Length: 282
Image 1 (cartoon, rainbow, N blue to C red):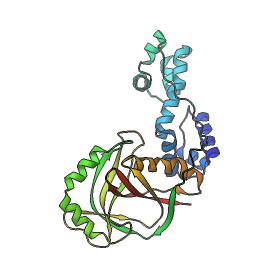
Image 2: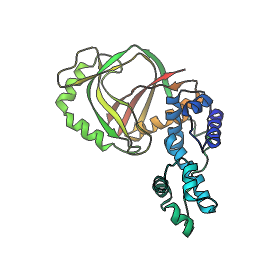
Image 3: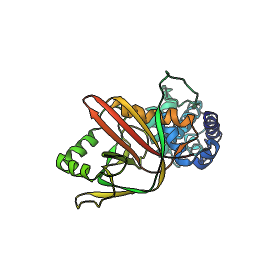
Image 4: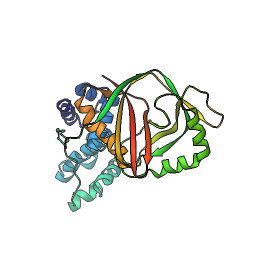
């Protein structure tokens, strides 16, 4: 898997000065486009589109400093339709505009070419099972929240607090299917950077009808990889997400498919026991 990911990275380098076809990158990596984007973001720490943008601006910076081409020629060569658009993107990455960089020779930023390697960390194993599950419904309430990598997510905390304990207790009484109890569904994540937004739905898996003050989400039939972990809250949950994409997926024949992921959490003081459901295919 890692070798094919590195072949995809080489393809990006060969096509930086033209449109990069993500479907072709996914084909080279031997995965779906959806899984390739998720895997890349988890491994690299930035979205694929951001990596390509930064690589182009790194190459553009060297041409700006060389002085052999006009700034407009450099802008067009690296995909910008005007000096103004190029200058905005250049300044956002390097902290100075291209004209200033050329005249003052100030230090610029560089996005290095990524190459993925396997790192062996400790001897801990990841507990998981694979479940076939027919289509089901989740009843609850949803919102859109910013992504937070470490620590509590204030937007989610406030959203759940706003639902109120009485409504949460009524939700729990509706639960009659696995996973039991309150679950959190996340989907439609726009990127992997802190502050990027995603859909968040707090509810229960049930066969019962939703009360008037709640919504219903239908989740299609899927194969699910189900992971369990226990440890300090909230780090255990956030590390579990990271480890699934950076360690488990690269070492198995499974890949994620588009659809909501589910998280069921039991908290006892500072300790959390979490069960994470991710839709997969092999």
